[in-house]
Amino acid sequence: MTTIKGPGAAETFDGSGLRIAIVHARWNTAIIENLVAGAKKSLFAAGVKEENITIQTVPGSYELPIGVQRLYAASQVQASNTGEGISATDLLSSTTDLSKTPTASAPKKPFDAIIAIGVLIKGATMHFEYIADAVSHGLMRVQLDTGVPVIFGLLTVLTEEQGLERAGLGSSGMHNHGEDWGSAAVELGVKRQDWL
Ligand code: DLZ
Image (cartoon, rainbow, N blue to C red):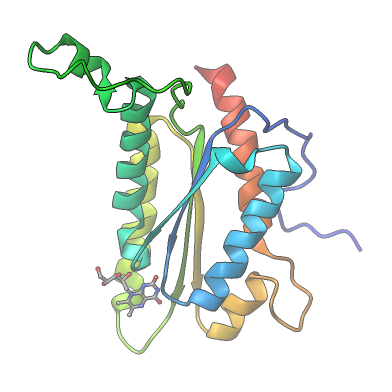
């Protein structure tokens, strides 16, 4: 049976030239781990190379926006590095120790897309609403401020069971939403290059 829900059929995108980061919270680890695995599965299926996938963790979902923002900034600095310990800025400084040997490895480019993954499970207080709202707005702000696509991998569920279902771990046969997020990262990473 065809279903209305979901992103619909998309053309396939070649991710072999992309650099992707996944930033995930550690709360509700069992669900998170499968979501991350699902995202990685789609990245690999699109040709993203293992060495071009960076995974970073933050304690909880509330920390996702700052984690994404700093990781992207760090990748920009890394991209401007000409060699080990010597950045373009260092080279212009008269106090830089030029005896540091530059590495032969090519500088890495900034991330093409970042997937933020967290699982918020509603409790008895208003905590859930405040965190969900702050994280949603924070992630949107980071992507619009930096121009790097930030994929919204935040599950906001009422029960643990709903979270397990959406990570492909439930009994209903619902697919792993992490796979959608991996595909979205590749599509946006590729399209963004054309939108520059
Ligand atoms: C405090 C808290 C609560 C109650 N629930 C969750 C949750 O369901 N999922 C999640 O990712 N994080 C939760 N946190 C932690 C906050 O996101 C945050 O890490 C702390 O408030 C510290 O800033």
